[in-house]
Image 1 (cartoon, rainbow, N blue to C red):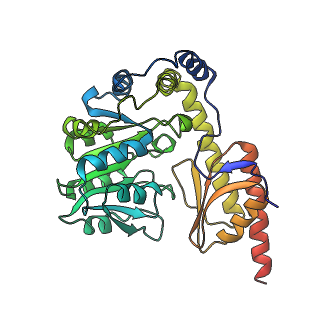
Image 2: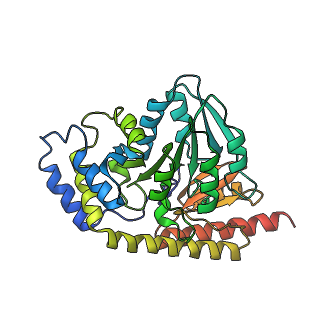
Image 3: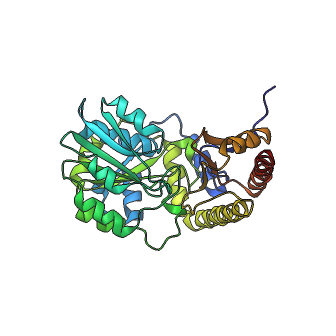
Length: 339
């Protein structure tokens, strides 16, 4: 008999629905659903540019950050070119490489779950067109510091585009975060990816954006699908930006719960490294397979990579308490079985 899923903690979604003001904006947009959205999302692009304090010609919008990533690959990759990324990472990157005929070059993470920047640089050659960095990293939540990122970017050949995935940057509380606008000025081969799916809680509406040089963004925009961003999504994003202070408070709550989970799991004997996303990463040799089984029994859906790691989205307090109870039982059972 299948165990019902009570808590969805596998996809790093927000535990909160859209704010009332955002839902009202969506409702009003639905009333005009018989009308096409803009051919290209110019109004939304200008709004995001103003919010990010960059010129509009340095912003491109797509169907989630993964949609922008695909547009980038279509703009710069030819079949047979290579695409390098740390592994494990966001599962979409190998799929996107296959979609454009690129040969993936996965580079193992360091033992502490960080992206190995030296190994990534060593993997680049004359056929490489894209190298991916996630900051914070998915799934481990580790962070590349501003100095380390700047040093990395200086060493990447200009024929290689750096795709810097900042899907979780709103959850990072490290003061050593990179200054993205300054990086864009210094590195015309850099595209920064961001999304409204995570911190802003609009995952179902599929809106992401990229920040880059006007030349790179112009090449990416030529891959945009006409009418590709629907009017409901546009209204929701614009309303979310107007309600940024409320959404920031929600993010602060998620961060506080993340740190509570980390402390409590550590007290139970789990080795939890500091993370900067909206998730917790548990890695082997901890009993992650036992933990995954206990979570399933408790109705918790998590992202389980057997023998490797277990990623848990930070949920609401009830979901997080359920996680703690299940993993406490799993840890106790594992310890007893070794006596």
